[in-house]
Image 1 (cartoon, rainbow, N blue to C red):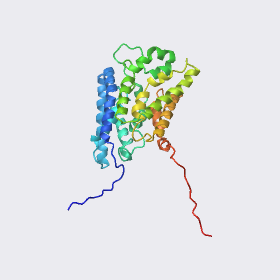
Image 2 (tube, rainbow, N blue to C red):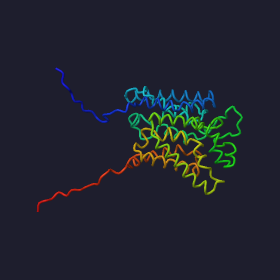
Image 3 (cartoon, rainbow, N blue to C red):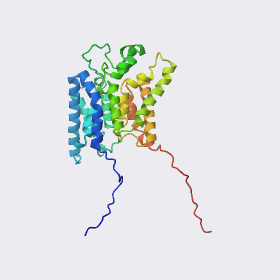
Image 4 (cartoon, rainbow, N blue to C red):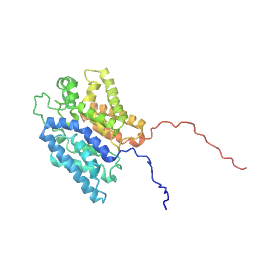
Amino acid sequence: MNTSRMVAAASPHIHSGNSISRMMLNLIIALIPVTMVGVYLYEMQAVRLLAITITSAVAWEVLLQRLFKRRIAIADLSAVAGGLLLALLLPPTLPWWMIVVGTFMMIFLGKEIYGGLGCNPFNGVLIAWVALKISYPMAMEDWPFPDRDLFADMPALDILRYDGLFMVEEFYPLSTLFLGLDVIGPIGETSKLALLIGGIWLIVTRTIFWHLPLAMFAGVAAFSAVFWQLNPHEYPSPMFHLLAGGTFIAAFFLATDFSSSPVTKPGMVAFGIFAGILTVILRTWSQWTEGVYFAVFMASLLTPLMDKIRPAVFGKKKFFKIPTRR
């Protein structure tokens, strides 16, 4: 005799149809355009960097999951996506052992030590980048010179810091920064057009929400516009801050990290604006010429607080006083 059964399970009861592997695959697809630009610019140096970073990230994940006696989960593509994203932030000439150290910190300190994917309070890619930047600052600024007729030998933000606004405008007009075919720096800081295409793909596939990237762009543009209006001969324009360095890759691919960014729409807006303002502050007055990655990392420390920002509930609270006998 067939009888109906009631199954009680934890929420959510309606699934969106998305999955971790699908979201990571969308992330990888979104990074393909800028990766192709990097391979075009740096050829085998970029291929070497990508191969070592992705392979070592997957190897560390398998090893650490076995060590912690967890299910091997490389099929979810999170290690591949993380390794690819980290490679886009590193100099193509970085020694292989530094790359392996970076991927270890990304997987161990950024994911497995907290219990695995989804349990990490910080972005593992940013943990690895910050650790490498602080530990090996010279190697992290050893930019290869592309085999093309270029006048610049440093990234745009470095020229701004050391040579001034006039020189950076001479070497890096806005069109060059947008197309990225004549830009020196990490692969992920080359073509903003390629990153924009990837960011639109993430939004269209609902892998990320548009609120956080747009808020971060607004924070960078609005705060830098204040100083540009005060002294346009010393401070660069908002468009320069948007197109130079890693603003685009940070806004679309790092600030929107699933575990370390806010889940509420007001929280996303607050996170983006704060990270954008902090980016301009660090670029202008800190010792680091590129402050966007530090800005996103520091903003993620406030994610639990920003998640408390939510719309007011409709209606009014009513308190009932329970009568007591006298």
